[in-house]
Image (cartoon, rainbow, N blue to C red; front, side, top):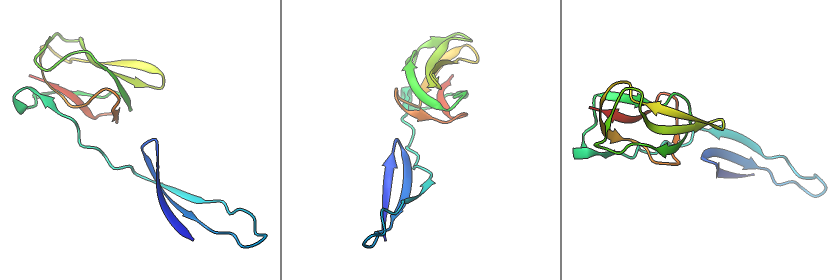
Amino acid sequence: MKNYTITVNGNVYDVTVEEGGAGAGAAAPKAAPKAAPKAAPKATAASGSAGSVKIEAGAAGKVFKIEKNVGDAVKKGDAVLIVEAMKMEIPQVAPQDGTVASINCAVGDSVDAGQVLATLN
């Protein structure tokens, strides 16, 4: 038996492969998924500090587009970034007026529901 660790689309699998004897046929590999390691969030903050108002992902998905930059003024309801989930584009909006203090993700990043994506001052 041989053990392998395989990563497919960010999911890590520990796989054990049995070598079949003569005439035994191919043995089916046994795979057990395990949690993929989380990457540290990419922070791009003005003056290196995060704001006190958090903008969190409403659903798990991928960051599709970043609409605002650090330092931009936003009004309540303005889209700061867009997350794609299940073929839908979901704007993540400012919960109140303010200034973008940090963007904690990049286009293409996978995000979990509730993950802080940006902050405002």
